[in-house]
Length: 98
Image 1 (cartoon, rainbow, N blue to C red):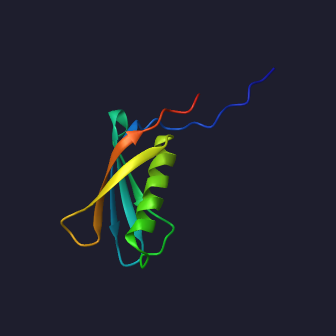
Image 2 (spheres, rainbow, N blue to C red):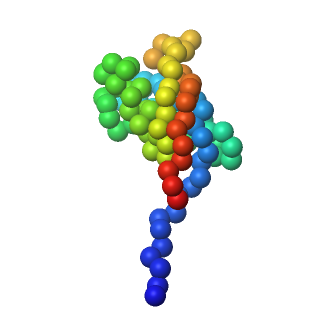
């Protein structure tokens, strides 16, 4: 009997830090990982750049959870530049079963 292949997911490691910043046309993020994963970055499709930072921070955490495949607790800090925030992962849940 043939096996159905599972989709390949790149192992990125555990998220440690999230950087979030507002540009004129969208919110952008970078997620830093412990281990071999390095960094994943990109733009958030939603919310709009005119929204409050809290909504964008929640969207960035959801993206980091999706990439890291685990629930995260994040503490946010305003950065030295206006429109920039840094989130420190304070707790990373367990990996889901394989």
